View 1 (tube, rainbow, N blue to C red):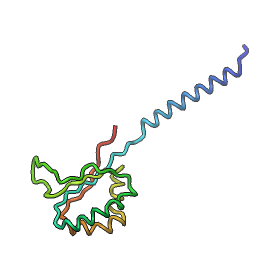
View 2 (view 1 turned 90 degrees about the vertical axis):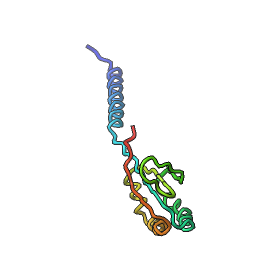
View 3 (view 1 turned 120 degrees about the vertical axis):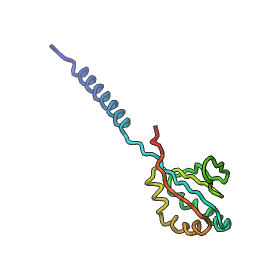
View 4 (view 1 turned 30 degrees about the vertical axis):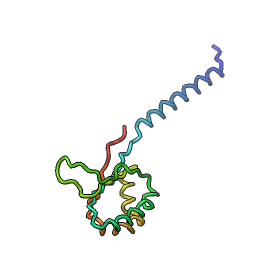
Length: 132
């Protein structure tokens, strides 16, 4: 029986492409999605002028990090317990690790004392829900 080598080659290429495409889909489906990291700050401002100075400098500390402000407000409604007296800020990062890298960065460490003197704060990092 005589076979057409061109047809066999085309079939093999088609099968290889199909396997490659299916493998790519399977690998993408198995990629681990990293949950976002959130820096949450509650601040009771004691020195508004000093905190304004901090506010003018914080953007440059965040610039190298992929971040997004989720909340930055003094409009707080207490549902249970005592709310912060002045302000709540939530900043989203690509991961908890990135949030920590920002907090530990030398540029943020340089201005952290300004905030610490200007407000009584609670600041923490939380891990978000894994994106679907």
